Length: 262
Image (cartoon, rainbow, N blue to C red; front, side, top):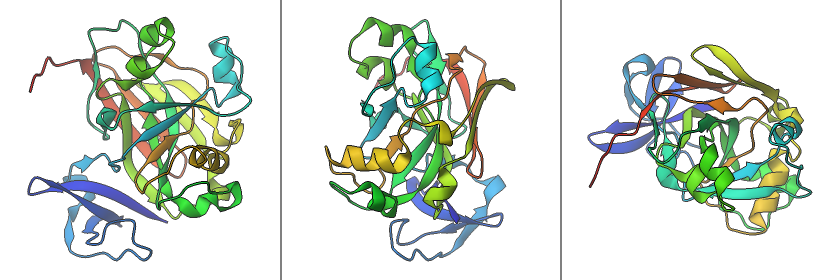
């Protein structure tokens, strides 16, 4: 397994991998069949990481844990229930989640993210993991009041900064290992969510296959695979972490949205 990251070099994002405590350039990017490292750029603890993904789309899965569906008094779907987040929602570990003025109830949802490694369409469940680059940690940040008020979830799920992913992609992890990983989400050190990927209603390979029957999946696309029970509120000044066994820890401060215009 290897850890893939993105860093900024002279104002441009660059794909790299972590070797020991060093960040090494990947000149050909992470999607080569045999990616090879180049120049050493610096130490991991001395460099700021970008989000490790730059997806053309973010596909999310709702109610994929029975207990999470129950906490919202919702039924578990018979087939995967899908929705989108815009790529503009993606931020990296250490970046701030910004609470929009339009919502009074923003909540965390810690999740396993699956990163697609090659273009695929109508792929079978048996072959689906061959199309995976790796996995990462994610937080499906949600404006719960807006989500409940509207039949479509685009606005409640789609604000800028509402899709933290990182700190890296763990590439080369096999399907069996991903089948039973612990997921923990904490706010200010207080454990809020704890579950295992084995509790998913639809496993990651099933989700990849199902989604690919509808749309072509491109390298770098990410699938958020659903959240365990225990979702809860975020407030300015909070620090939220999503930790996944053998994957890493995603950490983001929370603040009130900055009124920026372009």
